[in-house]
Amino acid sequence: MNLFQKENPEIEIIDFSDELQEQVRILNYEWLEKYFRIEKGDLVSLSNPQVQIIEKGGFIFYAKMNNQIVGTASLLKKTENIFELGKMAVTDNAQGQGIGTILLEHCLNVAKQKSIQKLVLYSNTKLESAIHLYRKYGFIEIELEQGLYERANIKMEKYL
Picture 1: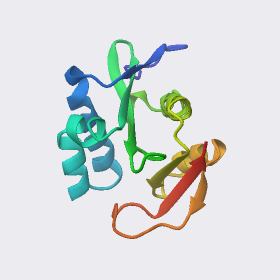
Picture 2 (picture 1 turned 30 degrees about the horizontal axis):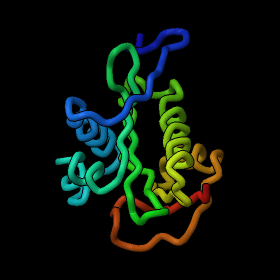
Picture 3 (picture 1 turned 45 degrees about the vertical axis):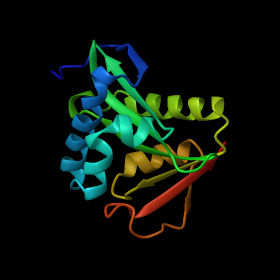
Picture 4 (picture 1 turned 135 degrees about the horizontal axis):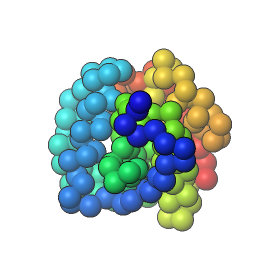
């Protein structure tokens, strides 16, 4: 039986803290190594999320279930009005419980509260369930510029 399975697990979304800084790297590395590979940009942004995301005006959130951090997502500041939804990962043995959806909804709510006008994201079409989730929440495909992430073959945006 899965370590995290129970009828209706309570999932709490919490904000970034110094004590949890390492969890962003751990969860994202686990996800990247499973589906792709860790790129140079990942090494930079995940080595010090406090400096690379928070101090640049971004936000990091964690999903906590059964007193364990099982997921994370970030809003990375691009401009005053545009943020990237990124660094989203859910640990393997907690997947399939709607944690990604809860993290996405939380990011959308925070973006609206902060009067962010547009969210962008980069993904890969082989992640079919993720792409389906983004479309369900109103993200649409736009032209992908080259060079930001090697693994990205789709860019999406949503105006808030």
